[in-house]
Amino acid sequence: MKTYLVTGGAGFIGSNYIRYMLDRYGDSIRIINVDALTYAGNLENLADIEKLPGYRFIRANITDRDAITAIFAEHDIDCVVHFAAESHVDRSIKNPEIFVQTNVLGTAVMLNAARAAWEDRDGTYAEGKRFLHVSTDEVYGSLEEDGGYFYETTPYAPHSPYSASKASSDMLVKAYVDTYHFPANITNCSNNYGPYQFPEKLIPLIINNALNGRKLPVYGDGKNVRDWLYVTDHAKAIDMVMEKGRPGETYNVGGHNEKQNIEIIHIILDVLREKLPGSDPRRAYINEDLITYVEDRKGHDRRYAIAPDKIKSEIGWEPETMFEEGIRKTIEWYFTHEDWMEHVTSGAYQNYYETMYGPA
Ligand code: NAD
Ligand code: TDX
Image (cartoon, rainbow, N blue to C red; front, side):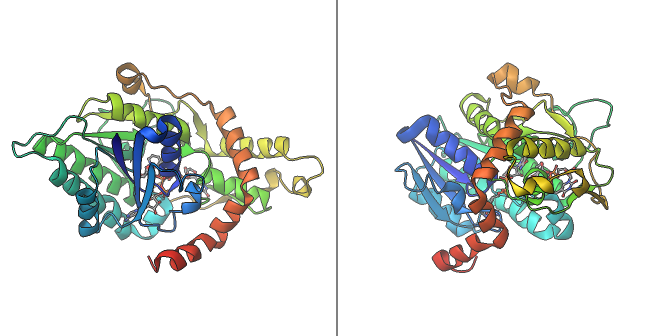
């Protein structure tokens, strides 16, 4: 039976990945979710999973070397899927240091602990050991509006403290591959969206603000382009890279769903109007008047886009969910999970952790 150590599994992508894996493999795998439960980690994201026999949660900070080493000592880990990170660009502009601590030092701790547990005396690793580092397309910098894509060979050119910290962590993984023949892969993914995304990111923020009649903040001219990937498609890509990826390789994961931010906002408003019943009072205020242009993000990357050719040809993965379908599924999820949004925006879930586990 394979045992996966998933870091950051209480966050947006990590919780969707754990659900995907337990749906797909059931009792034939074990998942140990290691998460510090920062503001972005929410055990409500896994409420339907916490009692499954193959699942276990451990609260630990990835920068805590002793705690991480103890987890490797206690469990025979086959695969690490490393999601844990500070993930929000705007927060990194305000407070870069925590991004270096978690994303760079935390990744170093994870790599060291995995290597110490896995490496044989002759410098080899048992069959089946694999460390998958989940990274971002933002490490490649920014593309021109009128063309080009990020490829695995594109030079790194991060601009924000967030992307600089992710680029640094990628470099550490590459150094482990080159120096210790460490069995790792890196996936660099485009913008994800879907259920359980924290409403600081564009799509859930716009859905939540519109439903509450609040302004919809658009940075700059609203024409920055992101390449949107439905989160379950990303979970499937990670599973396939873990199964079929060549050790040491990087795979870019993208949605072929490029959209300007302002287009996203118009689509969300259209779908909200389409989905809300005629009698719903919110229909009165959900309209384009809510759109408000605000000061641009500092160092705002203009365009991200991935051509996922390598992962398609080597591994057979392709994005399956087109944006028009994915955004409908996402909005329906937020409609049926108003309690989740209420707990997240009020901070109620964090009070619960303090009671359960003490201060972070
Ligand atoms: P998220 O912010 O929703 O979740 C991050 C999780 O990591 C939370 O559960 C948090 O509690 C945990 N965490 C943070 N610091 C920790 C620490 N020091 N120790 C242990 N746990 C800690 O992030 P996400 O959007 O789910 O992103 C997951 C990963 O995917 C990140 O590495 C991010 O860089 C990468 N990524 C995200 C996107 C995206 O669009 N969201 C796209 C590409 C790559
Ligand atoms: O209120 C907003 N108004 C706005 O115009 C917010 C929150 C964002 N934006 C713009 C900025 C970006 O151009 O929307 C775009 C998307 O912004 P975010 O949702 O903050 O995502 P982004 O900065 O592109 O980064 C995301 O994708 C890559 C994730 O947060 C990263 O973790 C991931 O690596």
